[in-house]
Image 1 (cartoon, rainbow, N blue to C red):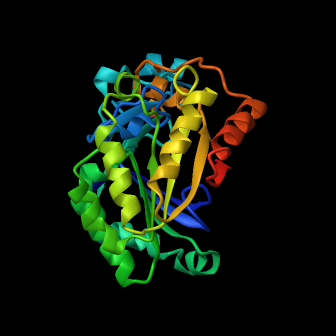
Image 2: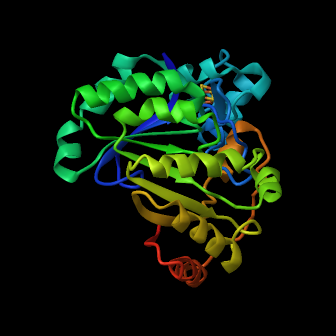
Image 3: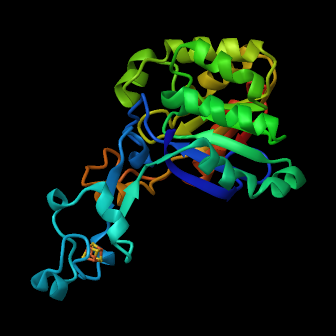
Length: 293
Ligand code: SF4
């Protein structure tokens, strides 16, 4: 069994071809800019979207006053299980326990599309290594069924966890967010020493891999930082497919509100296309293939 936030079908962003992406719940980091805050905790959580409330009262029993105003009950009167009672979409549960066959039932539906497009399955999160045992079960089953598999990971854990999954993997996509240890820790909650070591060990395996950097305003959105990361990536060698720059994603704002939490990066400015292009050009000066995601 594992705690899964979502299985997204027909994804074109989480690796090559058409993919199904399994979002694991729980993360060992706490990046300030996280745009999937509902994946951070290992526990199920309730998202509340008041603007969608029909005021029916089904979640806590009919309430005439609220029915007139179209407001959901206060958060403290609800639990994540209340979402099953709401048919307007005002209450949504993030995270559900799923067993292997439930996950595989969904993944196998699109097997023909994976094969035709060079795609497959991607395990993402959160950080999938928080549930490494369940991840291994899914990957082994994919391998047995001839489905290509990739992971999106932060590499911030004991290398033995990754090593155990490698025989069932066709691709690893990993983040390098900053080289400076102190700044990395301040903005993500974790140090980057183990990440750098694991990236080097991964590269030595010969498995295809992609390194990515989310470009974050006020954190690493400058030529010096991005070029330094690109130079580090170049030094890794191995079977690097490319280095990818990901634009800051501001879409987490509504999810923070729905979880009743403050968004640490609320109101942050977006980098314009020209700025992202200039950073990609700086990274390419190191001689590695660079893409923008
Ligand atoms: S939150 Fe959903 S179930 Fe509760 S009153 Fe609003 S629409 Fe009805």
